[in-house]
Length: 307
Ligand code: SAH
Image (cartoon, rainbow, N blue to C red; front, side):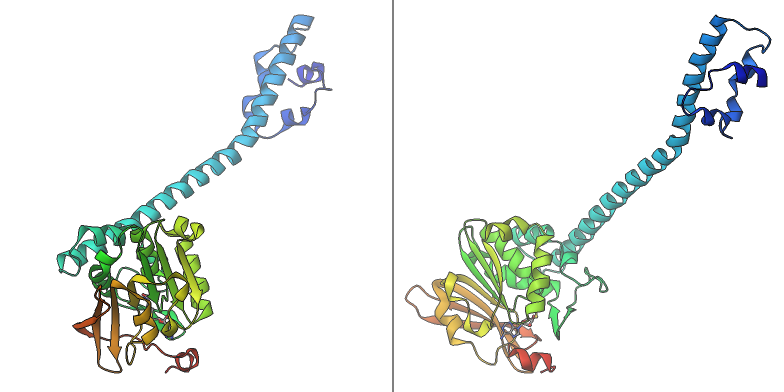
């Protein structure tokens, strides 16, 4: 065996591979009688040597490559299941809301299925529980049944091409829903007075199905006092206020389009969710829908001092 090894062209690069431990399990020299010299055998040996060198090289590479491919495929599968799982759970939440009569129209159900609530709830809280969840700065993302109710009340005023204002946009969830409903020809504006919440809501929207509308500019989120509305995109077909006002801010009434609708919680400790309709002649009607408990529509400093 050793004599045949010596007769091989030792100048072939990577000859050291031949002496590697891995190679020993398929040592070719045992197939050739070491006592048989001659050119043919030498050529054969050389070919076999380069073949085996390749194989040894591949063997040394393959395990790493193999594990990398397995890791990669595993990661892709995990992502798929995770995303699909999340979408399934969001769908289950929507079905739950339908079952309990909180969601009546297919239109709103489809929108709430499309905007995954998990993208708007902080990682440490369960996103699919029908309850408000803290988003920081003494604010909360509203409970899914409240989102459903407000979307149902406003849906006829969120047709493609219409303008919508979301005052106290918080997590950005409802602004994203509004944007999908009014589409790229419409406008959905979110106003929030805590800059950090606006920054976080922009990141939330970027990961959601409404991201292209944010990029296009038909959805925008701004740091401002919501009590002043947002005159740049007024008048609005739909105004939603996500925090309880002691009384309806005049600026919001002024920015409501004739034929438009505002949904706003009004009150201090005891609050009512009110629907305000502005008729085509400019007159206002209002009705109470239900008793609610929202965080107050207030100044930034009052909110940061926990009201
Ligand atoms: N619809 C939002 C609700 C967030 S809670 C969601 O589901 O995520 C109400 C929000 O109103 C809070 O984020 C709070 O910071 C904001 N807010 C309170 N007073 C405000 C004001 N004067 N101007 C703008 N935003 C205000």
